[in-house]
Image (cartoon, rainbow over the protein chains, first blue to last red):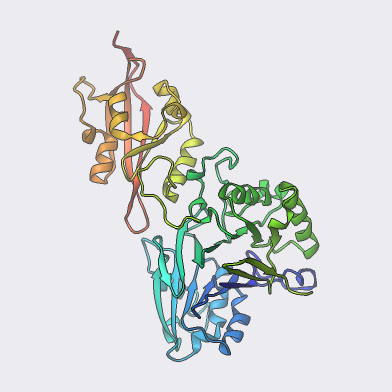
Length: 292
Length: 146
C-alpha cells in the first residue's frame, strides 16, 4: 500500500509562511491499495486537493474512513469533488452512536446554514457504515477499528496488506488518568490496534511542557506518544495532528525533543508533512518527504 | 504482526474502551470500585477496594468472578447468603440492569462489614455488553465473626 499525507494539522487549518514546510491543512491521508481501492483517512481540509487529484486517477472503489466528526476531520468533505460525481459509489465509515446514524450526524454539517448543499443532494451514491471493530476486507487489505480515548466517540484504524500494518490514531490521549509507563498494555487505549505496526501515525500535538495545560483535551504530549509507540512496539512513529500554533521551527524543536526519548533510534520517529508518502510492501517501508 | 484480538474474558487481553475508561475513573477515586468484563472475569479493583478487602489487586490478579465471589462472601443484612446472581454485580451481569442492595460482606480476614453495594452494566454505543461496575460504600459499623 502507498499512503500520502494531504493534511496533518490539528484543530484548525493553519496556512501561512510559518507552516509551509509541514503544511496547514487538517487531517487527511490517502491510502492506495495494490488492488486499486482507495481509503481516505479523515476528511479534513487536506481532502480538497486530494479530490482534485483523484478526478484524474479514480480508484476501483472509494472508502472514506472517519475517526470522528470534529470539524478538523470533516470540513473537507463538502469540497471533495468525487462526492459530486454522478453515480460514483462511495463508502463512508465512522464511529457508532447510540443516538443518531452516521449520516444524520454528518448532515448536521452538510446542510444549511453551515453548508449550502445538503448531503442528500450530492450526486454520488454514498453508503454509510459503522467503523468495523471486527476485521473487514476491502480490496487487498484488511481493515479494523477500535474506539480510543478522545473527546466524544472516536476510533483509530489499522490497515494491513502484504504483511505490513499502517495504523492511524490522529486524535488520542491514552495517558488520560493513567501513567503510561506503568499501565499494563492490555489496559492502554489503542494498544490493541497499534501493536507491532510497521508505521503508526499518532497524535503528538503538544510538547511535554505544554501538555499540563491541556490535560483532557483529547491529545497527546510528544513524550506520551513516544511511550505509547514504544509499548506498542511499532517500527516507525509519525507524529501527526500538529498544533495550529506550532510553526515549522517549533515543530522541529518538538521533533528534537521526541528523538531525545529514543537515543540511537532517531530515524524511527519523524514529523508528518503534507506531501509525505509512505510505501509499505513486502520488501519494507519507504518514506519520501516532500522537497521544500 | 497480530491482527485479531483474543476473546473477551481472557486474562491480560486487550480491554474495550468503556472498561479502560472505567478503570481510569476507579483508579482516581477513594470509593471502593470493582470491574468485571463481559466474559465474567473480575479484571480490576482499585486501592480503596483493596483496603476494604485486605488484599491488593496485584496480589489477586484477574480471576473469574465466580471464584472471587467465593472469596468475598455476600449475605443479606440478616445473614442469609446471597447467590452470585442475586448480588448487585450478578444482577447487573446476568440481567443487564442496575441494582442496589445493603449487604453483609465477609472479608479475607474473616471480618464482616455492613456495606451498601451498587452495580450497573457497561453497555456500549450499540448496546453491546462490556462488563459491570460495582461500587461499595460503608454502611453500619463493622462487626467481627470471631
